[in-house]
Length: 217
Ligand SMILES: [Fe+2]
Image (cartoon, rainbow, N blue to C red):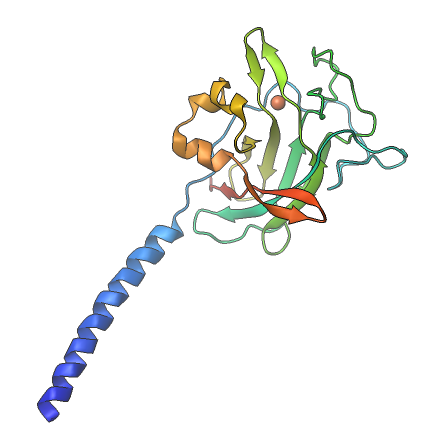
């Protein structure tokens, strides 16, 4: 009986050790996340300041109308490579309106401006590293004769102690992603990290989740 329990103890001890090893390996791999890939800033970062840069881009404060287009919610987290939330990061986003036109004086696209679309926001991640904004799905636009940019949102994320990240967020299942000269220049792994996931609905609007990983200097 004594012998048996010792054997059992040994057996469980061994199992415990093996399980422990697996746990360590798993947590190590989960601890190191790939930073979100960078992308070019592009030519349409806003050059004229605006008072309203809040998290609802479908309205401009002081104007009575509402932006044209499909309203959507973009949400996600900002984390470091070890998976820790990054709070109070500055998240600067700008995008074309639903017709594919930027509120920028040098945008050559003849598509119409939308005076009720905010086009630009600067928000912050909360204490859990989370962020959310409401916007319209940006239209595709011509970047060159044989190059149409797929719908995308530009991001510039900064936080003291981390490298500033300038990138572009893409939408899933967009046929134009494949032929886009920027997107197609990324590896499949990078494309995955730069493409939001459709993750449900919020107050009747499609929600896209785009998680961001910052690297240190
Ligand atoms: Fe763009």
